[in-house]
Length: 108
Image (cartoon, rainbow, N blue to C red; front, side, top):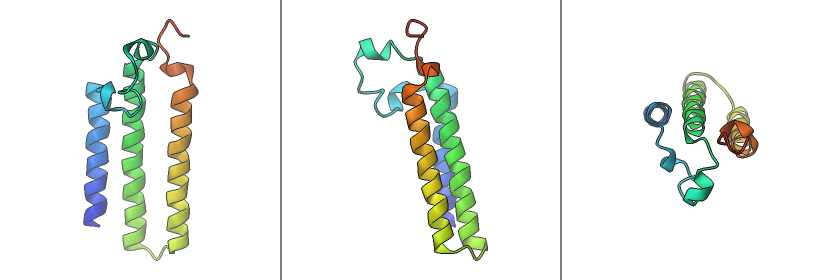
């Protein structure tokens, strides 16, 4: 359970940092773009989205940790929950790449 708390705290802290301070260069993919491509994105909106995603992941990880520690949940069910979490993260990644919400005003 100690590891679960540590990972949850780490995800929460990074999520809050992304949400409040908006360090866009910490986002994988964005940090390697050319300045011309970066100008096409609304970095603040992207940082807020990633911050919420990290905080939601922290809640999910903590919930899975609690289930594993304090209930008789089977390994199969834990695998399904982890798989669902991965699918949701992938869907969020696709959404972040195709949504016009994260485009700058010139691109909308």
